[in-house]
Length: 279
Ligand code: DGL
Image (cartoon, rainbow, N blue to C red; front, side, top):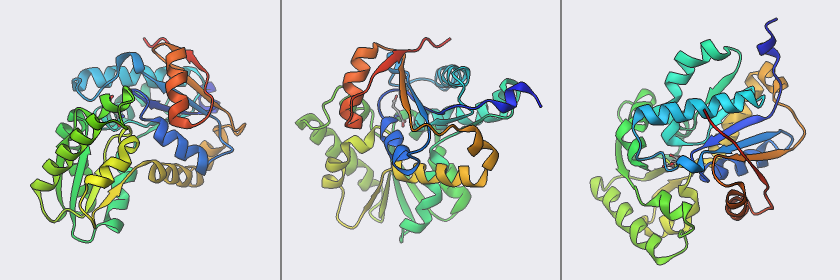
């Protein structure tokens, strides 16, 4: 057996910034026995306004770093990275780096649930400019439901509001209302709004407040967590390689002290972080 094929270690969870913590929190609830290693590329966030090439390069560096830390499986807990980098990494890079390891994203598992939720088949998606421009949600939804109508709207201000802890302030009300109105104006029959960015659950109360009654707002955390649980059930070899010490460690490319302070707000528990240098 090739030495790389027996790597055992924590499940790697990657996001450009703090948003992925909303996914990690749900994963830890569903899989409390697993070890997790979170990496936030806070020094280079936000990714949502960056080019395809840069998001791909940054994401590949992050995946390689998590592999070097021993992660056999990495979850891109970032829609922008899932939209712009996942396919290239899975198809082009993984076979060369280590074909036995896996990198999974958040878009496919989210889309798989949409058919159960929507009655009208009219879906709204909010996300970063990068995710919306990539058309990834439209493409994935249409693979499963060719007749669904998908309307996307980019919300470039929402990630900075979360990153700078303004999600409870009046500025957040202004932008959430404006963007939800713009989305709903595209199609009056939308009955399901997908939050296609892992930062957005931090704005959930305001998003619900400004979304018309009867419209279901879909946050990804629990969906992605259950999808990971199902994946491990279906892949016992990988399940065996993901270790079970119930630990959770944090890495950031920015200042670990600042990361720890902010992350504690997101996770509701004391966090310590270490510096990661990506190359
Ligand atoms: N949290 C990331 C996502 O899910 C994007 C944040 C960013 O723009 O960096 O798309």
